[in-house]
Image 1 (cartoon, helix red, strand yellow):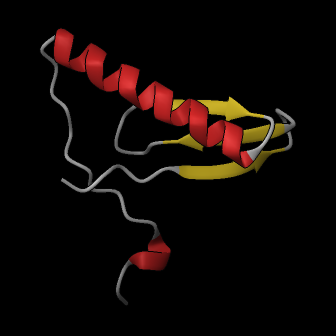
Image 2 (tube, rainbow, N blue to C red):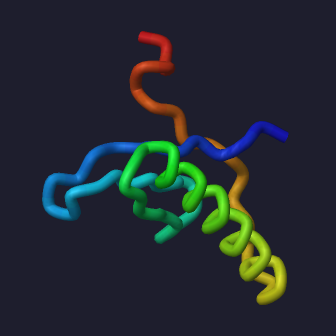
Length: 72
């Protein structure tokens, strides 16, 4: 199974880095550095998937691809 893409970007409003997983609705994390945001996002993903499974909710297949990877 391929894994979920994680976007990491700097947020001036939050003065830190945001990491979000587009395929998992509302799954995102914050960190003072890109590495910290990634670490937190991986923990959030684990919890998101465990909660969805425990509640019998649909777990989406990884589909998101950044535009840079899409063929023209």
